[in-house]
Image (cartoon, rainbow, N blue to C red; front, side, top):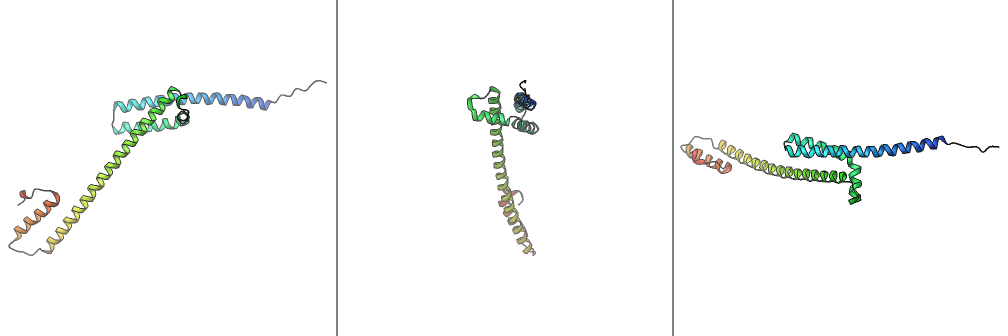
Length: 170
C-alpha cells in the first residue's frame, strides 16, 4: 500500500499564470512610466520651442496621452505623497503645469468671449439707432430749402453714434 500522491496541475498552472501576470503588470507599469516621461519631455520641448497653435494642440494631445497612460500611477502617487518615484513626481508636476496652463487659457477665452459679446451688444444698439434715423429721414423726405441743413444734422447725428469727425462731411 503506497501513499497516493496527488498532483494538482490546475493549482500549479494557476500559480504560474498569476506569477506571469504580476511580472507583466510590473513590466507594463515600467513601460508606461517610460512612455509618459518621453511624452512629457516631448511636450515640454515642444512648448518651449514654439507657442504656435499647431504645436499647442499637439502638446495638448500628448498630455492627454500621458494622462491616460499614467492615470493609475499618478493617482497612486498623489495619494501616497512622498513615496512616489522621481519619475511619477515629474509626471505629476508636468500634468499640474499643463492643467494650470489650460485653466489660464480657458479664463482668457472666457474674458475674450465676454468682450466680444459686449461689442456685439454695442453694435446692435448702433444699428438700431441708425435704423431709427433712417426711418425718420424717409418720413421727412419732402423737398425743402433746408436740405443741406438736414443733411448736416444727419451727419452730426451719425457721427455722435459712431464717433466720426462730422466736420469732414459738412
